[in-house]
Structures are given as structure tokens and as C-alpha cells.
Amino acid sequence: MQLDLMFTVRAFAEAGSLTDAAEVARAAEDLGFTGLWSVENQHDPFLPLAVAATKTSKITLGTAIALAFPRSPMSLAYTAWDLQAASNGRFILGLGTQVKGHNERRFSVKWGSPGPKLREIILALRAIWDCWQNGSQLNFVGDFYQFTLMPPAFSPGPLTHPHVPIYIAGVNPYICRLAGELCEGFHAHPFHSAKYLREAVLPQIEQGARKAGRSRKDMTMTTSAFVIMGDSQKEMDEMREKVRQQIAFYASTRTYKPVLDIHGWGEVCLRLSEKAAKGEWGAMAKEITDEMLTEFTVTGAPDEVPGLLKAKYEGLLDRVMFYHADRPGQNEARWRKIIAAFQA
Image 1: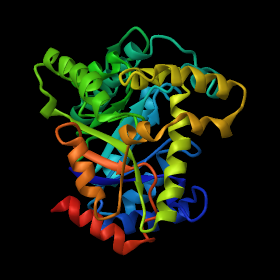
Image 2: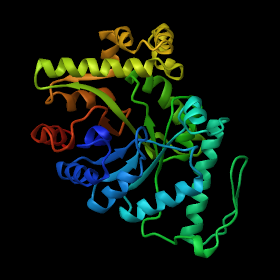
Image 3: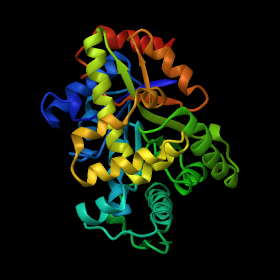
């Protein structure tokens, strides 16, 4: 199992400063993290990776995730191609759909058929990249996207490392099957349990893989895990409450109710949804019990956490990162011990 780092605003000295991104990326590579993933929440997910690509030489760089529907597949293709070139083949394009409300009300993007639409985006990207790499005629015609024009003046041309892995993220069965069928990897949502991955996610991924004559081993499973860790009881207690609040936020979304249902806690989602609708954010964390935290997190001292993560995710995940992580330059000795334990 490989240990990655989430490239979020928490890792920056100032909120999302691109001038700080180079330092964070270099520190992550020096410490021995396998990968560095950016997210799309308060900032563009590609810009920090562009900085990181020119300041590192070994670490994998990817989006976890970039939103698919607000961008044209052609725009995604150009950005991914440039990042693959700049990183000398270390880029992974991670895509996600987001939910209806964010697409329609935050990005003003028409919502409909998200699964089939994401499928077309994946196929269109590969058709575009094949055109650029091999000079094939661009003739992708789908139900949602059509790409039939690529004059030589607008083609960036071939790369030394032309294969851009595509990972997707999602929770519903269609997306899981799509990942198994077409993708190199799958980002499991941070709000999960081992039971949920084992019983709800992996069977669907395996079904999709069989459709394409593949197996689970042909793709990479990754996630950002909730880890409650500290060198003191005070640090542990503070992290526990931070994680409890974040889990309550996710659990209030009805899209993620199946994660609770599989443990018989579905009614918690309904109560949290009501509180969220009323703006009762402070009261929501109380709905997340210690029993739930046991299922949804890994808790232990820093020297225990690597073994606990490996034990929990053995056979389920190939790469993992901490949902809440210190800046790489902080607690350096602790990070080196943790990373060494993963590499052992």
C-alpha cells in the first residue's frame, strides 16, 4: 500500500498560494510520499499541479478530483496533455461528477444522465489523445459530445509518455462499474467504511471489469482516509472532534446515505439532513457516535497508524492519504517514520 498526500489549502502557508505550492511539492517528494493529489473545492485543481510538475521529478501528481461537467472534454484533454508533458509522465487525471445542486447552482451546468455523460467524457478524451499522439482522424460522435475537428495547427502533437491514466470518483453502482470497465483507477469517497468498500463498491467494480475482460488487479483503488492521530491526548481529542464534524457534514447528504444504511444507521442521515437544512451545523456532530467513528476512521498513535491502515484496507485499497494532514514541513520526523513504515 502506498502513502500519498492530499494537496489542499491545509498544506499551504497561505490559503491556496501558488507561490507556496512548489515548496510543499518538493517537501512531499523529499519525505517520500508516493503521490500528491489536488482537490477542487476552494481553488482550481490543476494550477498547483502545474507548479509541482516543474519542481519535482519522482512523485505522482493527480487530481482527486477535478469536476468533469463544468469543463469541455477538449479543455480537459489539453490540460491533462500539458501536465503529462511537464511532469514527464507522472500525471493522473481524476474526475468526478459532483452532485446536481453544485452543477446547476454553483457552475450553471445543465444536469442529466451523469453516469452516461461521464462515460462519454472518458471515451472522448481517449479519442482526442489518440488523434494527437498517432495522427488519427478525430471523429468522436456521442449522445452528449461531438468532436470532429482537429486541424494540425491546434494539435499539440505526440508525447514521450502519452498514456494519461484516468481515475473517477463516485458512490453509485453505475460509476463503480464504469471505473472497473474503462478506468485505470477509482477514488473511493472519504466517507466510507471497510464494510462498505467490501460489500458495495468492489463487487460493482469487479462486475464492470469483467465486462471489459479485466479484473480488479487491472486498476488502482485509492482514498483519503479519516485518521485520528496525535502525540498527546489533547491532539487526539482535537482531531477526533474535527473528524466527527466532517463526517457529520458528509453524512447529511442523502447521496451518501448508503454508507450509513449498510451499518443500519440510515436514519442518522435523515436527521442530519434536517439539521443542515435549518443551518444547525454546530449540533450535527453530536449525531456521530464513537461507534460510528470506529467504522469510519483509523485511530491511534503515529507509530500505530501505518499498521492500522494496512490492516483495515488490505485487499481493498492500493493507495491511501490522510484526509487531514500536516503541511509536509511540519512534524517532519513523525512523517518520515510513518512513510518508512508504509515502505517497509
